[in-house]
Length: 204
Length: 204
DNA sequence: TCCGACTTAGGTATAAGTCCCTAAATCGTC
DNA sequence: GACGATTTAGGGACTTATACCTAAGTCGGA
Image (cartoon, rainbow over all chains, first blue to last red; front, side, top):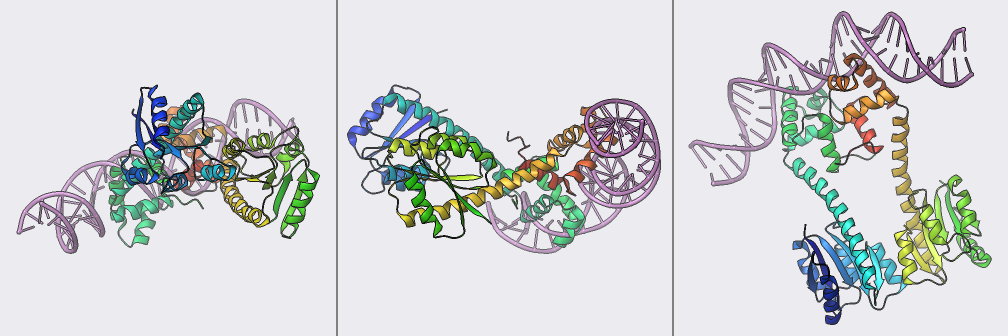
């Protein structure tokens, strides 16, 4: 597995020093960006990784970057900043940063943070992978098959579903068999589990 | 609905001033504690509410209180502190505080924070109530009924479950009927939904 | 000691779901 | 215009599940 670290800082010296520091660990792929804007332009095409983020930058600030990639589980951000204060730290943490560290940082603290960040990244991408797999399977279903799945989720029998969709129970059976095949499952419970994972479920 | 605010601060003047400020809103029930220890002693018996928490206190600090009630969705904490710094703010946010505000705070900022906090509290307690209801129903099941439910979750038929438990398929049918009754559901899908909600499900 | 819950099990009937076969109209794509 | 996917549907055999009936042994608590 490639462990990628993105450095986003407008200060050449900071980028260089971080690069040197991180190069101690030879399992890291390091990419540097000289502004938040430059990073945001490419963010959709990037592999998952850790983002070491400066707060004060011309153009998009660290907070802008954080809010943009807020819910994307592909990235875990650590804010590294020169002039920090409580308000900024709180904002950054609310925006989902793993940590907010004032420069000068200690090398071993940063290294430990990186490990934590990679651990969280893995958790997040496992969860995301499960959701993705489930959604991909659901997406294969035809509209009618999806209708039937919804009926099954609600706990209705083929007969009732047929009545609601105004089609023959026989046809419901066929859609049901089709969706089981497309979802690659052999039991209703497995099908429902995929529906759960894909967020198809009513929480009420 | 009673909206409760707990004030935890060792400074008499701060407690009094917060009390006065919050009294403007006559829908709030206000309780004050002069130390983190005093609050923690009662925390298990308290109703859900917002905790306005000082950081620097003799005995249990604000962070101690935060970590103790960390995962309890009954409370949402806002840290109000005199001498704050970035490190403390980050620790508090990591420990689950909704916000970290330095004194002197502005009254309207605090009021807005309270609204946000109550909103989050309601979300959390709705979710918690669902989980509780589900767990309570699962807890009613006898050991054998639970075994059968696990088999159903795995997508096995009565016959297979009977074989695995080394009992008659007939008996599995009875347990199954019993658990449907105890769970107050009429379909497998509803039963599985309760099992999901109770966290009985394998994520792998 | 008796009551209630849990565990176990059979019979019989009906309902529901699955698995095999076939078949045709529609609709968009190459 | 032919090909594939979608939607629609029937028959028949087989498997599963449900809904009713009864019944008995164990074990802990009132």
